Structure formats: C-alpha cells, structure tokens
Amino acid sequence: MSVRSLARIHLVLALGLLVWRSEAQTKYQLKTGATIEAADFASVQVEGISFRTSGVGVVSKRYRWNEFTTESLRQLLADIQGQKRITVRPTYPRVLQEIQKVLQAAGAGIAPAQPPPTNRPGGANKSLIQPGVQPGGMTVTPAGKNSQLKLQSPTGLPENFARTFDKKESGISYAALAAVAVLLMGTIGLGVYQTVRFYGKIEAERQAAPHKKQQAEMESAQVTDLEPPPPSSPALAPVSPQTTMEPPPSTVGGVRIFTRDKSTFNRRFMEMKMMNFLKLNPAGNEYLVVKVDDEEYWGRRIAGLSEESMALEVAAQNVWEQREVAYEDIDEIEIRPAS
Image (cartoon, rainbow, N blue to C red):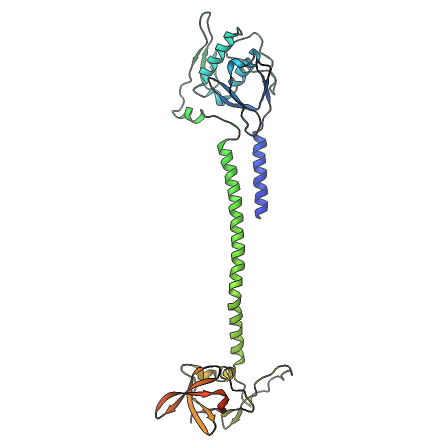
C-alpha cells in the first residue's frame, strides 16, 4: 500500500471521529433572554455548568445555576440525572443540592405535577428526582414538610473509581487525540522511510556503476589476452575490415617471434602478449629473449612496466638482475622453450 493511500485512510478516520463526536443541540434559556445551544455538558460543578457548544470541542463559559430560568433549570436537572458519567461522580449529590436550593428559592419546588416540556431528541423529559436508588447507586429520600432533600452517596465503588471518572470532558477526548496523532506520525514516518530507502538505492547504484564498468573492462582484456591457436588448429573466423588485430607471431622450430615490422612494442603489447612473464612465478618452462641492436637479453620475468620501458630480469653470472629496456630500442622478441 502506498504512502498516499495510507494518508487518505487516516484522514477519513479522523473526519469520521469528529463526526461521531458531534451531537444534537439542546437549548437552555437564561434570565437575560439569551439562549444557549449546547451539544453536551463540558463541566458540571457545584458552582455552575459549562457546555460544549459544537462537535469539535468549543466550550462555553461557566454559568451559575441562578442565571437560568426556572423551566431551563428543571430541564438541566433532568438532563444531568440522565448522564451516567455525571451521576457516578463524588460531586453529584452536592450539585443536586445546589440546584434544589435555587429552585426552592424561586418557589418552584422539586417535583412539579407535570414534567416540563423539552426540546431534546427522543421525546419527553426524564423524571426529576424520585425516591429510591438513582443512576450510579445513589439513594434519594424525599423531603418532608420541614426538611430538605436527603441524598446518600453510593457505596461499594472501587477505591480509584472517583479518580477515574471525575474528569472534565471537553470536546474530543485525550485518547482520541492521541490516536489521531499516532496515526499521523506513523504516516509521516513511513513516508520518510520510503523516501530515504528510494534515494539510498539510487546512490548505491550510482557508486557501483564505475566498479562494474572497470570489472567489465578487465574481463574483456583477459579474453583478448588469450594466445592464438597453433597452426594445426582450425582457422578462425575471418575478421571484418573494421577490426584491427595484432598479427600472430612467426613460429620457427617451436619459437614464437614478434618483430618490429609486424608488432608495435609498447606497454599494452607487453600486458597483452607477455602476460605470463608478468607473474611473480611465470608458468611453464620458457625464456623471454629481447633483441636490442646486436644484443640479446634472456629473461624469465618482467619485473615492471612503464609507459616508455620495461624492467626485465635477466641472467648475469648465475644471478638474476633487472635490466631497463626501452620499447623503441626493441627490434625483436622471442619466446623460447627451455631445451
């Protein structure tokens, strides 16, 4: 799968997460006449409440309970009771008590004969505080004639239960943001890895190209260095006029002879035709005889080559010594078998 395809998948997942987090708007009326359109509760505290006003985590300011109209405060009370994530918090009883105080101060009471109208999706509002066990395990005792509402905190909850759920929730959760961040970082990391790998491969091929070319030239030179077949062998295929080849040496009594009029003596000639004598221990039992003017140098090995001359190891009084011989002075070269 390509990097572009992975990026598209991650983008679709992120957008889907944002759409999933979006909710229907609920309206609450303030005493000033302003209307709050809320998607969800952002923070429910004893002092007041703040709302998430859109599906992307925009949070309103905190409103005190006495800032709402009586009908909106009753609706808020019912909506808070229906939120499981709020009813399990340790501050839930104090929140209910604070809302009850505001309603009693307004002369509204806590249990009207008819439930207030609601504009939340799904029909009529849920009932207000009723006797018995409320969501989250809380026990509610109705208020008497001269007593207020009694609330008893739930029991039997794990020790770290309150710490787990008593968190402010605003917009997308931290876990969702972390998941999106990990996906994006993975996409970027994969793209960087593929890019580095691609350009690294190109650089390795570029550096290996000269070595491959040099190796091919060396292999080609070794094939060219093969000695011509003996006279008794079948004739080789005719050479095209465009190809120039060194003429074969003259052979007299098993002696191969290279003369100046048929061969060009230079460094390349020595590397091509005298390859055996360039080895540290020449194979076979042959002598290299180099004729310069009226002298003959008998050698067994070529010690070195330069552009103008060669160093030939020659026999001198039962020892081998090097003799410098210029290519332009050579008249003839013979390869003689040792008798």
